[in-house]
Length: 192
Image (tube, rainbow, N blue to C red; front, side):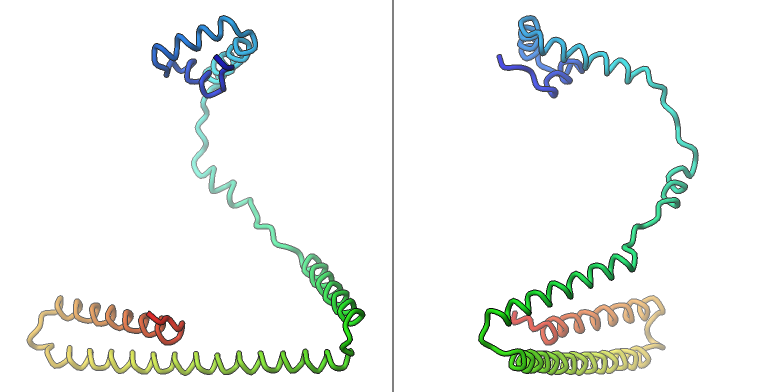
């Protein structure tokens, strides 16, 4: 039999083995001095653990400890160092690019700024579309809520208060579902 692993030793000490497995472990311990010594150490440790007194923590102990723990935030100097490193890296890469490319600095600057302008223009168009969509969604939502409130007012004398409250909550739920589905379909571009 191969040497015992710690899990088998603890299972043996906890008397959590089948009779066959227990006999196998005892046979191995009789022939293996290394495992026998390891088992004795584990047994002494378990006995020592049983003799340790159990203390109850005072009320509010966890809150006291947690209140003393302050979150670690990078200092402004760390941000400055990171920013400086990024600028140096970008400058070095740019210089290497110019050194090995046939494109001049002026051409590169023009191309870079044209790309930046195009990206800015695309971001602006996307933002405008987003805010227009949100405006449409808010307008539709307000109209839907207005219609629901008008219909509730028209049946108020006939319907009990509980049914009115349920109707308003149901209308709000339906409105939210409509807004979320429109958001997913038109704003996020989900083609489902």
